[in-house]
Image 1 (cartoon, rainbow, N blue to C red):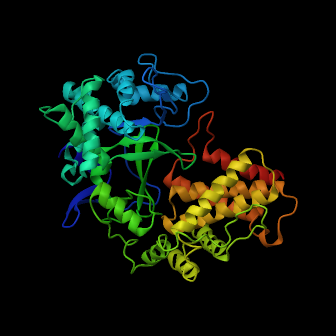
Image 2: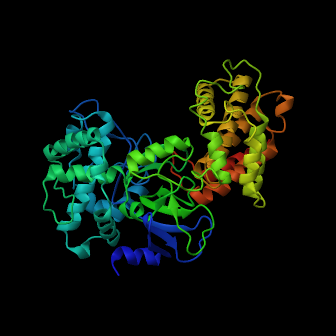
Image 3: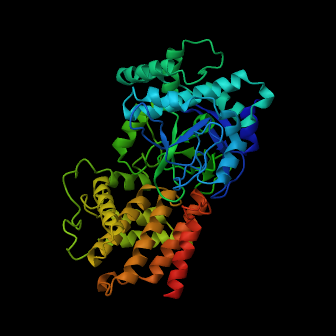
Length: 507
């Protein structure tokens, strides 16, 4: 039994042959919703950073090298390489123990930054990732095996088993990868290796590595808000878990670890699946992205329109047909009296009951609520309009606006966005949890700020609704995120909800 097989078995999982997918990973035992299915550091990862002004300046750290949370105004750095920055000394110490003790100095960040200026900004992350992967693989190959952490052996072995699909990539993308590979060869950023035997032309091997990482990398997101925080290459997770637009598992990036968790109860023999794309996208857009980036088409129950979830998705996928039509109640002027479609409230009520009380036939209720809704009000195009409305309202409020109508429209748009998330994602998906909390905070601010809540909103902007949304947020994020994580500049989800409760109890 090799290292990968041993780790998979110890996690209660099993890889079996599949006539269509090739391989699939199934549960060897039962898992409860929220259980950890697998936890491993990525082969290589890096947080988002600020672009240097020119080739004479080094990339500025924007986030912690371990947890990827935003850096405070003053922060510690690694005393040796002076490249890795941290939000706290705790993260610095933990990162050193976990991996930075061998990563430190493997690559020359100044050389990478200088080389990156030869590329378009959108391709600089590809350069950073490829050099990082090459450095990790070279370290594994050139180091006494006993000194290499077991997880790194596992990730390096999984990398060698990933399919590159190089022959399937477009000529335009291969040309871009060729330019990046030439920059890699000229960068002199450190000793690199992209294959297990090391017998390779560096430029050609870099192109294959870019193809392989391009269809297997992950984006990471904040634990405190739905905001991208960095990039990660984790070959084992890519190798094990197939795609579904309605997954039964998800992953979080927590303190340098990729943690895969169950989004629902998983029975023995059930396949465990992640999503490779945004499940809120219309069906045609999801299929297009899966074909272009991952080179397959999806036939999950959300993509099969004979199922309840499939029929919901079919209604939401009317984006192209109604792209020129605005939702009827979308405000063009925030002085307009606030209003909300009944279907939004009718959708959120059974959802909160599903999360907090007893499981109900949520999918069927969702379909019944939206089946008679106009396409211009309930589609991906409508979602985009309401998301823009929410962001615009939040921007005004963040700049000190106390306009009552603006506050109400912020609440309304947030409720619409929440309704669309409920329709698109599994019930315990983290984006729903974050949106529940955002909506609860907006409702609370309106309740304590607006002198007279409009009569038709008094059952929405009320303490009972705020408490239910806050409870939903905590319940969901305990499953699909880590609500206890905090830093001095980033209060945890737990503390945000506790503050919300305390404010209501003292008002």
